[in-house]
Length: 286
Image 1 (tube, rainbow, N blue to C red):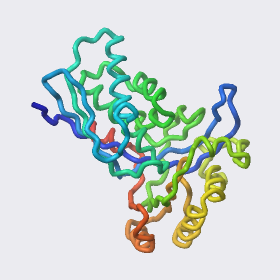
Image 2: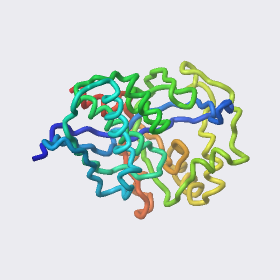
Image 3: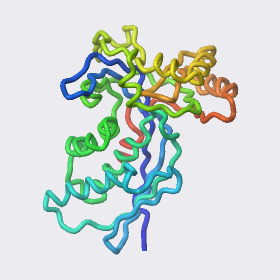
Image 4: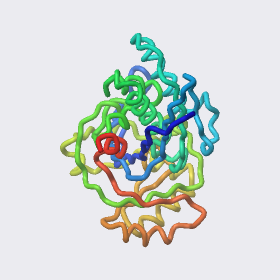
């Protein structure tokens, strides 16, 4: 019989800005960005089983099991443990409860994978350290390592070289337009700015920073452009990641709530506060 022994959040993230400072020889881009977490998350429940079998319960995302990043994380970690010569692993069933919108630039899938890696590693005896988990996560997705890292950071490289920082933790109104955005199409778009002047972890807040994907997304999707203009009437607003979500920054939850009341009801929106320590790490250390 399955027994629930661990429940962990898989929080959203925001890119407070996102620059491309050049192309790499391997075809990737050199990025600079700031990651900050939100107190708004999916949930993963880990159940031990007595039959040494593994399973994923996912009633929300409609992603086939073999394509789900949670299942890929479980498979990759299981292989890493086997390569270390660690014996029979206890069976486990993971239930994924989705709250974050998909394809939103909030890192939901990557966060799910990170929480799966961290949670399973703990259940199996913590034989891998954070650096080893991040190396596994990097093969699953570029944003997975930051969720394992678990602290707000200035990120460089392909977004996986971290310098911890402590930016302000305001309230955010996050809104997802009803559009589907192809990250690959954005990276190959001819008007995408790829030569931003480098900033640093120490001075980025004093520089004029932006999200280089924002003008491209707004040009390709009039719904995003119109929503951005509407939100700018209430607060500074920016695209996160490669979209589609926009986030507006407020000093109080009440101010964010008042702006949310003006958002069309058919759009997905939520209010959350910035977190400089990931809710995943906070939960594990409680």
